[in-house]
Length: 472
Image 1 (cartoon, rainbow, N blue to C red):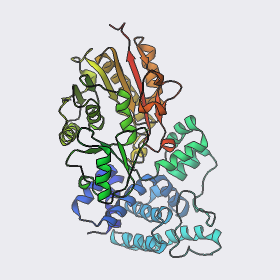
Image 2: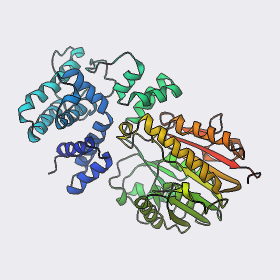
Image 3: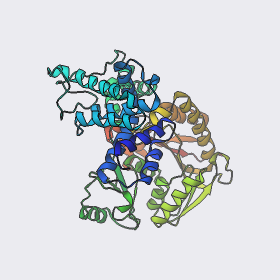
Image 4: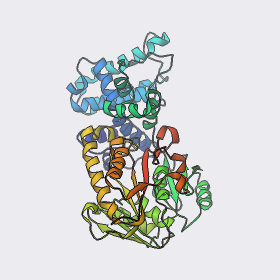
């Protein structure tokens, strides 16, 4: 079976039963061989329908007699796919979106409800067409798209006045996440951030300077028609700006010329600024993007302890370091909160803490539905414990970098403020104290923050802390 919409339905059904979206997609892709354009359509329909779940449910709530949660689960999934295509897929004609969704209903046990599916989707189109004076559905090949439909159309989606709910329904986020952003950014920027988070993610490469140069990789990629551009402030970064197909088939993968790593994540190791010959501990290392970057920045000279409690994720780290031909990394399995053998041994420690990932939700389509205020509270306890214990690994005068890919103050600013209040022998090292590509992202408090809608990179928080000499 190679129908991308049917495959998207199967994967989406798995997600609605609790599977991670990327795992559900891999599971489906392993069983079939798809043309590139079908693969892209499947990926777009799956991730898009998961991302836009709240908006799609609200459309069902407003247009159907039964609310979305009262619909049979598989029918709700089929309706999500139909509405997603009508609302967000400019290249898919309305007639194709409706007919293929009716066909999905027929093939998946809802033959008796094909009229309902057809009627519901056409009702959406009729409402969308009213402003254009068409009096009926939009023309066959005129898509209605984006979260803010053009002036030619009335948006069939009715939005409440309350700004939190309005943004939450329009851009498909839980209210609590909108609230967290509004408190930091205000209304206009929160809307920009929501729009950014609903874009398809870009792919950045980090060039391995021990094996090649950025010019050599640029030339190799251009020779096979892959367009790239450099990222300012990041000496090793290239962003792919055209479709590249399978990552493993891009020139230089097997040779260890580069690894995939978002620009924001590359900033973290530059902030750590490890030097050749030092002892560095990466306390939550897997799957190893930052660990291998640290090794490259140290010219692979010195010792890096890569610690993590998940053996399967550490295997990925091992594979990556072998592919990049790095020798300085030693793997250590276990929970860093329970290690005592590293006290006062490290010149530098990186704590890339487990977090809610609110800065990378465009990459993880289902993250916005998995995290809750309770899960953030639990993570903040873990982050505090990790920071308190792993700070003991640092030698006097040494450095610790705390980083997360979240934009929640409870996991970032509050963690650091609490730690500093309880740890008189630690202080923030402000950007004026050192040269770094990260300096462009500094805040008055001395930490660094990447806001995706401003810098066009994953959302990140990072801070560099220095241990004073008067420690025990």
